[in-house]
Length: 598
Image (cartoon, rainbow, N blue to C red; front, top):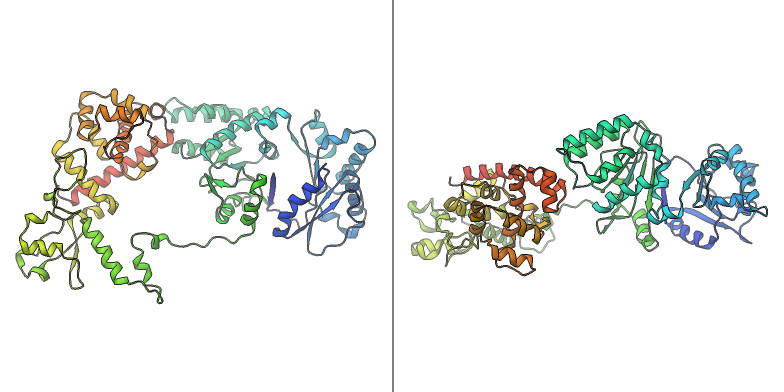
């Protein structure tokens, strides 16, 4: 089911149409009428009155048979209280009824002719899948038709192509899709539905754009874009490289790219005459009111267009949620700081709060101490000047004996604290005591290094441990170990690890690279277990990071982004983003080491 959201300035929008199931039409429209403030009146059989009852300050949608629609048009055009100017659009379902014998076809033709000459500003939309002379019909009756055959309906059931065909190539259109795969599928589908004449529109400029994309991809172009570029159709999602996105945005402004299928977060800085929302979802989440307003706000350029149109395509089971979407208030903007580890600091703003803020702050400080990010100066506890500079984070106490469990502490130690058995009794007692109000806190070396390197505080200890292991066992005969160290931690949660690909890449490694894998605890036995679906004792985070390092290593060894992406079964955009993230993280590691102990 399709529902239209207009940004036009029409003060009244009336529809006249014919359908075998008028009651279903009325019921479907009434759901929106109640919430959006317009009336739905049925003119079929004994229903409906002439002249229509006047409705002050109310928009009316008339659902009518051919005969009743003729009466409505006669009344509006031939007097009707001067309401002919209030008609916005006339929709004719099953427009092939013009050819029906027995007078009904002639009656419909007469009604459309009156509209054509008496209301030239009214848009007439005809829908049918069985019209052979569509262009002639549209020209004679000034109808905007949706030319769909049964075959076309099979792969474009929502008739997105018909909506797009109304505005291209003179104007541009944006189709929002819920997933990356649907973006690509919609782009391919539109090329099957749209007129072949689009290929001739700006043909030479499209050829030049294609050559630019080939050069951008190092001789490779996406097979889908290779087909869609001739129609001026493109898709945008996170799997597309930044260079491709840049060229397609430029092509959109130049009028070469007339249709873009994109995910909702993308292309929000561009403006199109027509916006189509293929489904009210972002991934698996239903649209929010704020996101919906952002999407439909792309329709119409301020200063260039007087209006814009947007369509939200719905399925019957989505009507209730869509009703709430259209009439609900925009969501409030609330900071997520209170959901973070520092939420206790937010509680102090509420004078009626029963939360013990001081206790929460102490709890936070203890967590930071355990991570080794802050320390307590000991002059107040030991009264000894020789102990004042003792750091409560003592990295020398760490051990790297178990390389398979990177980051493990020596026996008897706690996370971020030195082994108490190695300290003087009084010093050990001072370390073990919880923080007090009289204590003086200062940032530890690790804390300074994390800030200097712009490293996430939760990851600082893990990075330090990895660097300690590397300092003792750095493999300098291969770049793989260095690439592993600069592989960022954050993106790994979405890493699409394929066990068969990991196995093939592992078996293709040279002896020096295999030494790096064994140093990390990743042996051939571990890889084989993962391939057959068994679990391994090696930390899964280490495996994921090593997998991404293998991708970076292949690019470093001379493979292009396309080749490496195909080998690891990932989008080319993911590979490019990983390269960019690794370069940025390498700089962070460099500054981290300068601020730490090396």
